[in-house]
Image (cartoon, rainbow, N blue to C red):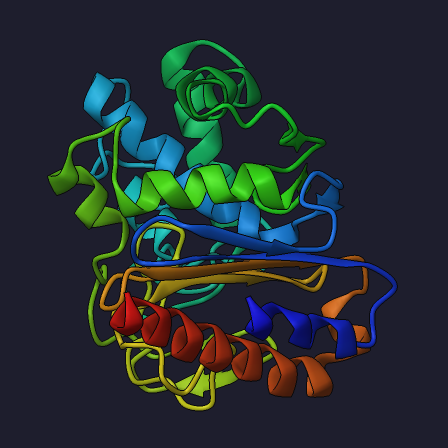
Length: 278
């Protein structure tokens, strides 16, 4: 795929990327089996693991966790009232979208407590092992301390596009806006009057500017990470993209926010043109 060649221009030591086309064809560039720290892209794994646990009856989304009025759903949707880091709440649940590592960690801890097993073990048995994601390793906080490969994350994308571990209805919850209309900030991007999030995955909505492409549909969901990583799935076109680098987002954020949408738009254009020609 020609679009993926754009990553060769990125100012990073190493990069690997993949695009998934509507028919399931996968195109890659770079070493798809090279491990990278994926940073906050890992939050998507937490959200999906929690939904497996919901279907197994281990937890439920509206069970109380943390401060009064806060639930697992609030925590996964960054609406629990907790700061980026820190267990002391800074506002009431459901009032603002406050991006929070703490909230994701609290949700994972609630699952570990309910299952009476370490969260990492549950995630491995519920998600990683069934999908064959053998190279994905939890090194600490499930919110951001995870390493993986393009190959493994393509396997995760395939699950997101066509669920096998949970029902389609449950999977829909993952990418459905939770607590619509909450104002908030996407770190490194900006503040939005309506900061849409699903269950540990961001939803593009009408955010502008954004780290996905200008042609991504509003239903696009995914995450980017502080390690210079990104993953999105556009259900409107059935196209998906993942790119991993080993340069911190903060070190090239201005350029990343130009290069990432450029890549996304190029992937969408080529994927859809390929489908139209088939």
